[in-house]
Image (tube, rainbow, N blue to C red; front, side, top):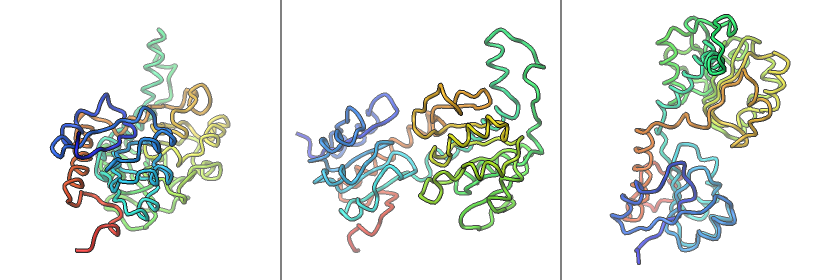
Length: 321
């Protein structure tokens, strides 16, 4: 019988072989949940020494049921699916991988900018229908010289700013701290929305940023502007976005993250031909995924060896040195 047991709530890859290979070194078995429902997770949580989670909600109920667990490891950056305050009260370490997939997300945002501005997807779909007509897809825009507004200038936002400047875009930005970022003209959010040809959301999802893009803020954008979201679906009021598109108050959108996920692709804004939708894939590359899985498994292994794992986000639960 293994010394340790870890619950894996959910994951978007084929199996847990990468993680299990690392955890074999500490004699830890991985128990995979058959679904990510709260009741199922609460039923499987007792007796587990650690929880690994991707998108599943690790709620207070799940945390309370995990009577032996002292470590919750997030396979990603954001922590909005984990009740971190409750985990902290229960003395559980919470870790993430804050520098994972930052290049991939920035590159995906830039890809959506080009797909929309150059109408790449529109032309592609037309040719697949047998239509080979350059005029039908016009207008298409020159990307260099356009203004990109980045909302949130953390690691991903800064990389996107560098990439966009390299292809000749003017880059403006807005962030909560107001701290300057080299190469970025800092504006208020209202100024950014009114100025930008492309608005890319790179902010975390918090109570303050939920529905940041709503009816009021969409009205501040130019009717020729595009919205890009590769951060969190909850940053956008999708009903308001659908209305703005229907009223031609915005030119289009590139959405990699939705609320809910998966969305109803048969309804606006997802079925609008001016909206490019990708299935929450911006984070992915074969290199980034392998690195993520290995690093998360190493965090759990370190914890089970009695060591402090990397990237503890609630250090107050660590024993005093």
